[in-house]
Amino acid sequence: MISTKIIKVSPERPEQSRLKEAADALKDGRLVIIPTETVYGIAADMSNNKALGRLYKIKKRPENKPFSLHVDKKERIEEFASAIPASAYRLIDKFWPGPLTLILKSKNSGGASGIGTIGLRMPDNKVALEIIAQAGVPIICPSANISGKPAPVNFSEAIKDLNGLVELAIDAGSARLGIESSIVDLTVLPPEVLREGAVKKEDILAILRKKNILFVCTGNSCRSVMAEAVLKKILKEKNRDDVEVVSAGIMMMGGTGATESTREILRKRGMDVSGHISQRITPDMVKKADMILVMEQLQEKRILEMFPEVKFKLFLLKEFAKISDNSLEIDDPIGKPVEFYEKTFEVIKESVERISSII
Image (tube, rainbow, N blue to C red; front, side, top):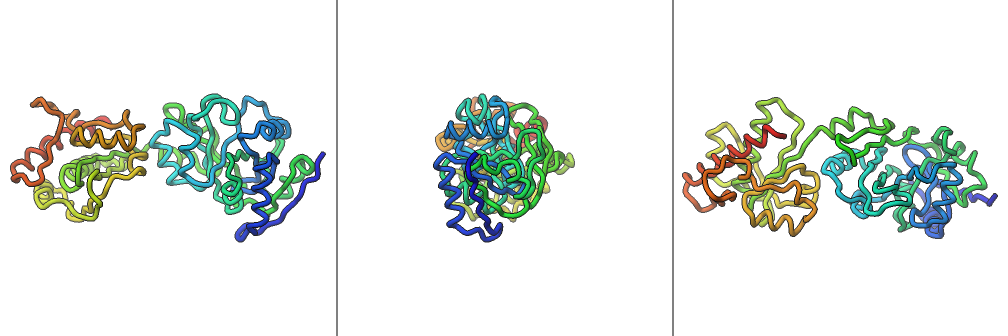
């Protein structure tokens, strides 16, 4: 048995010096009980084998059953996971920070992450997030109970069985939600909800059912605008609300509108893009997209230079058209007569119609 030091903090205005003490303890390989919005957990440094071994022993948990990693920022998911699907980013946008654990392919195998997979969560709790951030080491944080017993929803429940087994315990009152996180496995197809916790299964599935299509051209003022407008019109006619359609450019700063010829061509066909504001492609757009469709090989090359991991979801839009020439490129109509715009639109329309039938 060891002497467990108990530190009481305000859940809303936690004293930084007390949180630093907890973070320093974790860096030193000690075990610390901390609050989250779901239940209380036992935090440990995932990279410290001694701490990890003690945690498995205290929890009476089989070592082939991995612990989930807790992060303080959404972006840190990419430090630990690989081959991250677009659906993961959409779930993160919706539910993080919050009570949802994602199972993803791991950048490393074995240890706390399991064989080839890792669980990741960003808790919605000021105390937990600050401790994780200050610790600066990868933090795992399973519920503060012996395996098989109920997860503790307040400090008194957490300390009851663990007093004398951990070095430090943070008392921040009761957990706000009092129910464990939901768990979704994104390493299988279709994704599987392994545990329904604080986030409803139906809400998770609603996000998983959605798709995101990103059209990219040079300036986001004509070709990608046409493609976005056509697909949105088709989806509306089919009463589909499960697809988000976005367009962007690779060589502009944003803030301009669609060209006059683009607006006129689309207006004649019942599509109003007078409110369109051009935007530059961002990492967030790319990550959330299930399919990225470009007009030219140059755009394809630029995107792959910036985001090499998207090569399996990046296509030339004209690949989906009935090819009548030897080119897979849709040329830029900027500076060309309206007749050229009309021909460009017809190629885009044909390609988008075929895409709409497969998404």
